[in-house]
Length: 262
Image (cartoon, rainbow, N blue to C red; front, side):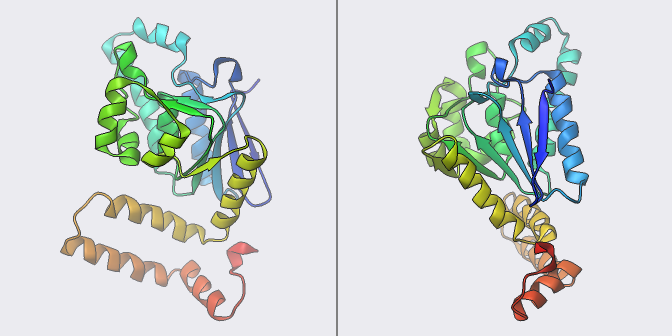
């Protein structure tokens, strides 16, 4: 049985399934390597427009696998660093993917599972799902996932959740900004909501979406000064003269669908 499964639909939406339901989709070094490679292939595939990250079984992801943690306990500091760098690379790959990403959270997300959620652009969650950053309860810290979780929920809320390790509901995750949409029914509502978001995403220009993500990363991490203003002016000027930019404006003026919509 493959630990990562993929399926793509006619819209170009690739669903990437975490497929270790017997251990609540906990990840180890093998899953990390496989998921990283899967995401890189999706990024390079011109047929893939949207990536949906989902979990098989009752949980989205329980974070680190217990067997993996036992092995890490015997590692040297250098071996632990290599292990941590592999997870950090997975998170970087997911967070900075130029294509839109959706996390479909059908069940609990703990530890590193919260990190995967925080790295996705849009998060849809079943209202009965729970979240937790439990690392401190094990004498550890949410280090590699930290930049993405703090970006999602803010430093003030991270102080509480990183230090207590307490569980919090999907409703609270929504209030904090980690989750964008809540669903009341697991199967129909979650699937329909994700599908509606995919429809909206594939209606937009793929090049513009990649540029928009780069814009967010830039403006979210710098003061609105002369350099920022000049950079944003450069970005819009450049994209206006791209083939996609010209096609989008032309389609709007001619009242037709742009070519990327078939």
